[in-house]
Amino acid sequence: MKRLGIVFLLLVSVLSLRAQEDVMRKYAADIDQAEMKEILTILASDALEGRETGERGQKMAAAFIADYFERLGLTPIVPTKNGMSYYQKFELESSQSGATYLKVKETSFNNGKEVLYYGSANLTAPLQSETVFAGTGSDEEFALIKPNEKVVVIDGSTGFFQQWKDLIAKGYEHGASLVVIIGKATDDDFNKIVSQYGDYFMNSRLGFKQEDASNNGAFLVGPSTAAALLGSTQDKMNKAIADKKLSKVKGSSVEYLTSREVEMVGTENVLGFLEGTDKKEEIIIITAHYDHIGKQGEEINNGADDDGSGTTSVLKMAKAFTKAKANGHSPRRSILFMTVTGEEKGLLGSEYYTNNPIFSLNQTVVNLNIDMIGRTDDAHKDNREFVYLVGSDKLSSELHELSEKANATFTNLSIDYTYNDESHPDRIYYRSDHWNFAKNNIPVIFYFNGTHDDYHKPTDTVDKIEFDLLQKRAQLAFYTAWVIANRENRLVVDKPTSESVGSH
Image (tube, rainbow, N blue to C red):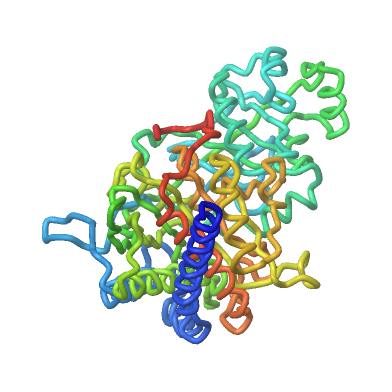
């Protein structure tokens, strides 16, 4: 009899699990391709003018999303003087580059052409200084030179933006008057950086208000420009690094100027809240950025994949969860659906939220972030049913195991962890909105389809979206969120990062 009882309990458990899975499949099916195409066609339409942060198109997109949340019955939770709102509004400083250059004798290296300037200094007149070579910027190399009040040139050619920022900080810690970073090992590779990111550096840039407008920032340069600044050659510079004799690179006198025009710009995250039941104080945050990069001249960057695809997914996930709740299947934990602004300008919307959270970050269980999941990259032309996942194992072993199981049970996508490798040169872990949660020790998963030839171009349009893939990847995020929302125990953070800037 005892054995029969055990068998009966196991059978009941299996049937209960299958019943739960059937419920999950039922609502995941509401993330349908037809409405996804309708939503994305609106978000990526010419009428929204590329959804550039602070511009009319971005605000039109925000209004569309807020209206969608309201029609779903999601709760507005941002307190304002007029009551609760779906909009988390804030201001950014818009900085337009003026005359900005480096000059050696009669040769000028101009911003957006031969060099790229990253910073906020607004000098009233050019400055003169001597250059000094700091090799690759290690502490050992800085000990070999005297960088005080000089223009420090650092070889950052093996890194990318995050590593460059670290080197810039180190240069100023050692007393540099200005930092110059060699961005790539060859001029051709650096010119590709200029081609891809030149508009970002030259156009009006947004950021949080700078209390100290004297921040000199840094110039990114190619190796031949660096050699000219140092009065040397690339071979001599490489040999000085190898021999640990940086003083062999004598340096030279340079003139530099950085100028900018500043105004304040308003923008907003859009938040919709679904309250849970017995664990409602614990919050799951599902994000995508709904801004894009606006226009290139008269051409509109529609941003269908980047990140209309992620925004569409968040809206459809919100609809599936609200329908489930209306039918008696409310999540135990609360879910905050948040489309953020300013990602293209430096993860600004998510940074603003984590610095000004509606719910304490201690209450936040996980962030599932979706940025570009509507296409196939070149690496997967023969295996299109894939998704890149980033971050799932960084902070919580449980999250990674749960994610793997959700995929194996429901979607059977080929999960590619290429970009999860922190040594990968693209540093994807640090380049979308999940990072602002991860650095606060909140577990994250980033869903991504890789880049393609239409990335940040007017050709990123709806007709190139593969809606069956968009649907399936969004469903994987949905299943993962459902399991996290309804499990008994909160995800354990067993791999806290030492880079955390907050507590959790």
